[in-house]
Amino acid sequence: MSGIYVYSDRLEIAAELIGFAKSGGQAAYALCFSQAEADQLASRGADKVIYLKGDSPLPENYGKALADYLKEQDAELLVVGATARGRDMAARVAGYLDCGMVSDVAALDYSNGQLNTERIIYGGAVVQSETISGFCVVTVAGGKFSPVSGQAEIKTVAVQADPRVTLVETAPITKEGVDLKQAASVVCVGLGLEKEADLKMARDLADVLNAELGCTRGISEERHWLPVEQYIGISGAVIKPQLYISMGVSGQIQHIFGVRDAQFIVAIDSNEKAPIFKFADYGIVGDMYEIIPLLTETLKA
Amino acid sequence: MSKIIACYKWVADEADIRINPDQSVDITKAKGKISDYDKNAIEAAVEAAGKLGGQAVTLTFGNAGAKPSIKDALSRGPEEAYWVKAAEADQADGAVTARALAAAIQKIGDSSLVICAEGASDTYARQIAPRIGAILNLPVISSVIIMTFEGNSLVATRKLEDSLETVKVELPAVVAVLPEANNPPLPGLKAVMAAGKKPLTEYSAADLGIDFKPRNQVVAVKGYVMNRKNIIFDAGDSVSRVKELAAALRKEGVL
Image (cartoon, rainbow over all chains, first blue to last red; front, side):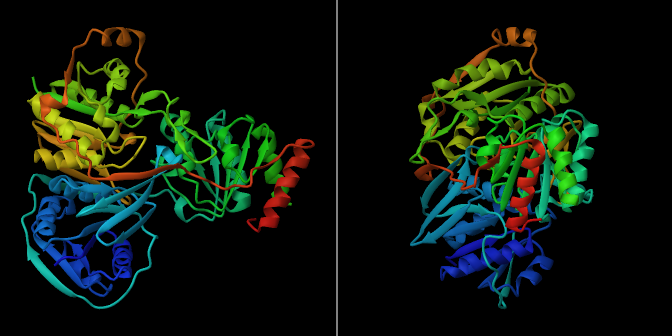
């Protein structure tokens, strides 16, 4: 069955990818590796749900089986949700089939057998446009397309899972109450903060704004003042709040990548040449130890 | 002795990239550096060699400009360096890079572990470890934050979006580590001095028989435009600046 094949370990993203495939008028085949996923996917508007059935609980162990199946089916394109598992699976398939792959695209278009993509490189400074003809793989984050609905038949295909990697245990990550990705406002501290106790100043401002507290990579990974879940940037949280206020953040582009979708960016830093001001809507050049408490007081009033 | 191979990429420092007024990108003045996250891969290889036994080595695929990376990489602890030296590295996509590294890994011979970072700091495409595993038919574990060894097996903890997953594999295997896996120390002067005396093996394209044809065609490279207001309050004292900021945010309706 030639057509667009989609996979995500997240049901919502899978549904969006089906929506993308259908929007171009092509057949959309939704892939999964468990009966439970197959049952859930069956009402999400695919032309068919393909359940590759083997004896491993780890989706990654089906990389080779998936590559072989797609080749056998003469698939046109594999679109995968850009999660940790999805990126891994996608690159394995690309490796087995020695085909092109574009990761984490910001935009994509598939027509007449050609994939056109845009993605961000150099930590956010540059947009690269690429095209690939022939079968290829692309990963895309959730939230880019609208899901569709409709019943689909489930086709079960028995496959061989790779037995070499075995699951020992899985444990949920206990989040410490901070969900930066959902936050409407975020206060962010950078390495300009002199000591850990000064986080209180940032927390006070966050409280007044009903904002979550975030930080740069240096604050969490070098100084260990906040958990890694709270750092914002290309390898950390990518956020889209209405309001982002930074203090003592220089504005390296890896960090800026994580806040580019903020509606308003406010920067407070003592260095007027700090790159953050180029990316800011509003800024104050000044000593944050003076400005932040003043701002907190002003907003309280 | 079995080798533990850390792969790294010599990249242009994005801090030196200039975007011209017409949005064209100028990287000619950018200094090179070992991709930030690859320092974690090198440190992971050194740590793994300490626990597992074997010899930590580095491997890179780059053009002649990657020369300074060799000493830098070796100053971080590995004992030997391997370099696939080819001008074609400049146009390489994920398929070509993985083919080049995989061919070198085969040439190097007896290796128990190949360690990459999740992604490079220039492209952050996160393709290389799974692709190498597929090409060499080795098991792959990505998103790794903890590695322990039991005999000839690796027990690795992966960090996924909402869970920690611990898996086990018998070596050899390919691993992609996250930056949280370790804290690479800055090399000391002694380590830097010693690095110059460590052996380097260069491979040419002909040595490895690599197909350099990229699958992806790059059609445009442009500076990213972020349209922001860039209003800086710099008049008056701190109190009045803060008041102006608060007034502006109220007006925007974000308070």
